[in-house]
Length: 114
Length: 117
Image 1 (cartoon, rainbow over the protein chains, first blue to last red):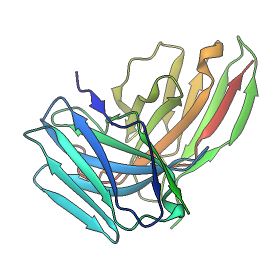
Image 2 (image 1 turned 180 degrees about the vertical axis):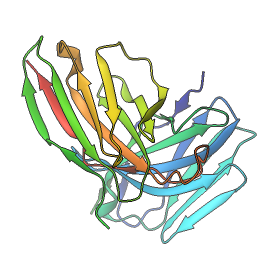
Image 3 (image 1 turned 45 degrees about the vertical axis):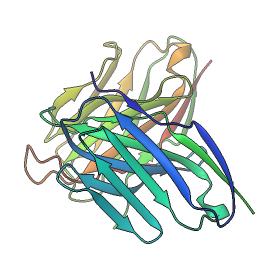
């Protein structure tokens, strides 16, 4: 059974500092891994999708890496801003799993202090 | 293009009642998935529909059911509501041009917050 873990559960940094968020998964046979952002009481916004054949994806200040062999992904957010405060979730899609089932980590709640 | 829409956004029910939630995917998307989010269990997969067929189901009791219409809109139903069903119910859609294509991004709606009293 695939398990996805995100540590730490919460993180507080001063504005301008780089953010490093970790995601680990137990089953390396994945199709892809997706990072999401969730603001309080809202739905999920997709940030980056990394296919299993890729090592990293970049979008603006965001960079996500994937190491399937070690079962890890890292999301880097450069020069954090107060608007980056949110909960960040990673989710994996298992290879061979029928359909579009995503298994989510518990999330990391981020607070960027001005 | 309009995003994924869910109705209603908020709902209050009492134990034993039933509820139906609706999800309209992004135009052209054929796959619709449902998730339950609670503080204790996090985000858990309920089921996925593709071309009006349920093709994947999570570990939820039979009180949770769903369906998809020919225009890809989807509904989920929860019968005999329990206090523990209080949660944010999220719907996600993806393009799914091919039946076994799983590489695309899933786009989530804002969710329906259900409170069971």
